Image (cartoon, rainbow, N blue to C red; front, side):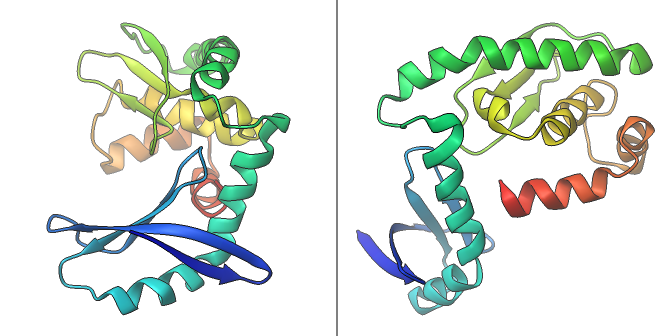
Length: 184
């Protein structure tokens, strides 16, 4: 079911997905500009609109980001992915080389994927995966995402030791997290 909400002078269509597993309201804005709200079983539909209004700046920012990133139109997802996959790979490799001079971590392989909700991931086998959209991030945020996953090679959880590794090369990592979450 598609709904619509108006922020300032813009109408934003959105859909609601009910989930028995969700613990909180969640908003996802996808590269095709779909806005999806996940509604936990203990929340009411009435809660959705106020939450959307609370997050309106973030939602509009995401929509603008996906519409305007590098002047691309996101109609043909496969073409956009293929066009940017190599650029993303080169960015990731270059950044890993830069930071791995300090860390010296060993990894298995690097893959660029069309991820819907994540910027990156690290597997137990030492595989590093990154969202091709990383090329659209400001350089300092792309570096944070890459260092974040790189440090998971040594420490898989987000325990204190993990954050100490991140802080070794990015002392202002908390500010970077805030910026990434609020603007992208």
